[in-house]
Image 1 (cartoon, protein in one colour):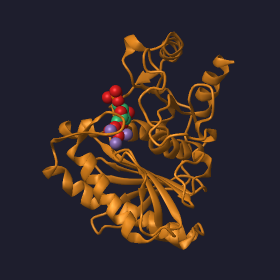
Image 2 (cartoon, helix red, strand yellow; image 1 turned 90 degrees about the horizontal axis):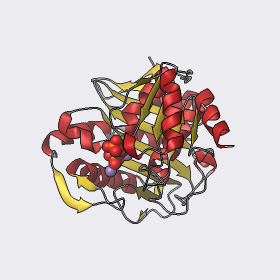
Image 3 (spheres, helix red, strand yellow; image 1 turned 180 degrees about the vertical axis):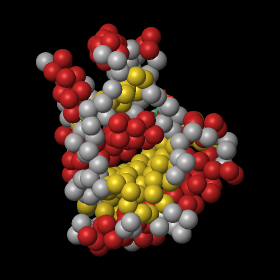
Image 4 (cartoon, helix red, strand yellow; image 1 turned 60 degrees about the vertical axis):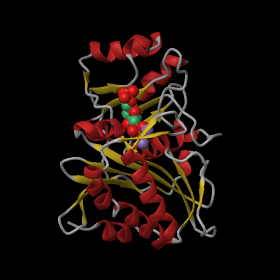
Length: 297
Ligand code: AHG
Ligand code: MN
Ligand code: MN
Ligand code: MN
């Protein structure tokens, strides 16, 4: 099995981008080791109004330090920082958007959580998702895995005991599938969302939802189906964030032949106005997303 470094050089990945991707992937070890001594909640709220878990802020600080010290990054947009972080290396070639720890409410019950990262060339973090140079997520489950795309398909790597990421699957294709996971409280679903889910259930779709976007999406990437965090009554933009959750995951979904939509529009075509803006998310198999968007017409 080849390593992520070998994979990136075989794909002709630009050297500094490859270095940045490997630097980020290497932080899985320190993050995994930090869980045991960062089990509590901080007293602070993030910009989305969420109570920050200690691991949210620990991962955010750790990744920010590593990225800033690399000299490769000029700006960082993070779920856990109000403002965009300006690295000293203002000449840094890349900008990074990140959800340092996704699914943090599940740490207390030891379910799989992850880190989501998108990388753009240049110094702006507010970009259309389709302009991403690389998107990846680390998933801290029974294995530590890296799911990565640099725009030539999606590859899956597993971290071995020697700290190497070994290629497990290359050019992953998202099949049509019958799993669905939907966030939000069912009584607050809009009629449109509720009837779409009811139609899928009537066709035998099975619900699988853990509350960790990375873990729930990973199942859809492998088995096909739908992950939704919809608009709800009183929450027209849903809960998840456009810049550091929807765009990187959507880039990976598209690279695997799937799609991401806000219910009517391809999210990768949307230009964000604010770093922390939220969006309804429907991400999954192409056929399901196209069927959903056809309903809106
Ligand atoms: P984060 O921990 O980064 O704030 O993300 C949590 C998100 C996402 O991971 C998950 O799909 C969703 O919140 C779960 O929300 P509910 O608890 O409302 O289902
Ligand atoms: Mn959060
Ligand atoms: Mn998240
Ligand atoms: Mn998070």
